[in-house]
Length: 333
Length: 279
Picture 1 (cartoon, helix red, strand yellow):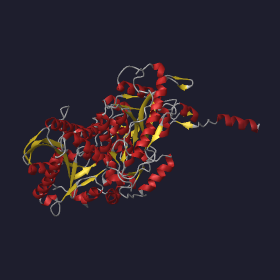
Picture 2 (picture 1 turned 45 degrees about the horizontal axis):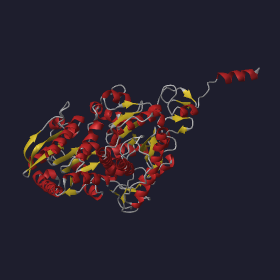
Picture 3 (picture 1 turned 90 degrees about the vertical axis):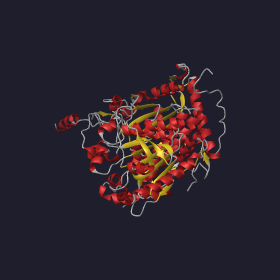
Picture 4 (picture 1 turned 135 degrees about the horizontal axis):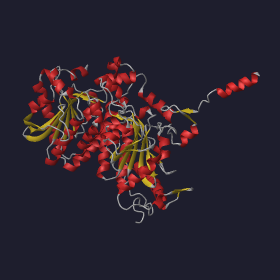
């Protein structure tokens, strides 16, 4: 008798889901959410993801070659708040396994070679200090020097206060990097992910040729709290969301995460001009990307990474070894 | 303490410096898109006999003036006006003089939804593109992105008691100390004073103010600032126009402190860009 009651009770207990969506509060399995690119399978809420995961989603499998991974910040001001700045950096490094709030390198996106720079909000709020500015500059330099597109995924709380004026100057530095890349007519695409704010959204993030955002991403220069504290204004519904920004004309498109790779790849090919590449060449089949264009793009990403690394150490500019017949944009050439 | 002098209500404003330094000033208003923003004044005039474009934040002094000029806090239309004027200067080969004096960009809903972020970014990019000489002077408060939007210059001059910072001490204290009462500690830590910025190479020169601050003798302060601007212009005149743009880019490229074990000390990186010696 007793035993039966026990069993009954167990059945009536709600099953505690492995994962709860912070937006719609419905449950799902971790594996389900991961397979859905960290997007809620019920409501489509886009969770924040780290730089490594983003690269995995965006770049074609195995094509990303990291560059300048050893660049670390110094402490220009000797900044101390409740902790010293170097302590905060060390904590962030331990937490994220990254050296800084941005990861840069070469990659192929949808069979199109590019320079890829991805920010990580988990590293001190994705704040932009000297290293983010410098790595972005080098990415722009490589892209413009090699006539490659630059793709940047931007997510940031703004400038890194602990570097004082040096962090502010990164806004100017990255804007100058955009000047560099515009001058070379290299395509430049930014993807704004939640949240993208302050000094980043007011510099390179919004200066791209094409500027898109993920659904629901919060994008603002001045945050809702500061606005309310300073001006006591009523905030309109949906204030600062990607959708609202799209409506106001500040974005080219809002693109769900699952479509990012294909859309960005197409943007890059369109901005590159010329004739449309044969889709059969880029297509993905069961064995991965075996098309000729995809192979060539991956090869070019590899060659460039090696070249960029070497030219940095040697400190001079030499022609990269010809990546045997791998023109990025004219597959028929 | 310096912040107090920088924010002193009697401190000379952009209009005062224009009055002392620019003859026959012709103000040009409007962003040509939708609005005029009195927080930024701009126009043409003669600086020591030479036609120049002047753009600067205007704070105002009396409460009425401050309200009109919105305390020097510009909206997107202000930055777009600045950008339109930079283009004008470029077209006609006029040197650009900017005066920076703002607590920051205006933090309102309309400004935000009107594209504040992009307006600031475009102003910076617009300045980066210029081939005419650009001299910026930080005359009072240099508040964050709203200030930098007018300070992407070949030479950045700073008055002795001016400040220039990524965030207000109050804002920084509220975030990092979680208590705005720690503003004095934050002000100390942010190193926003002219001499500290000179040391960090964020500005080229510090212009001495009359004893007690520029408001004690505005005419003398303007005279000294004018001399510094004239000297900067004379130097910049020696550089060919296209070279100026490259050098300006290079100036900002050098700003920042990082270490990179893959990069030999003092070497040139990737494509000829300068890399500061490792520390």
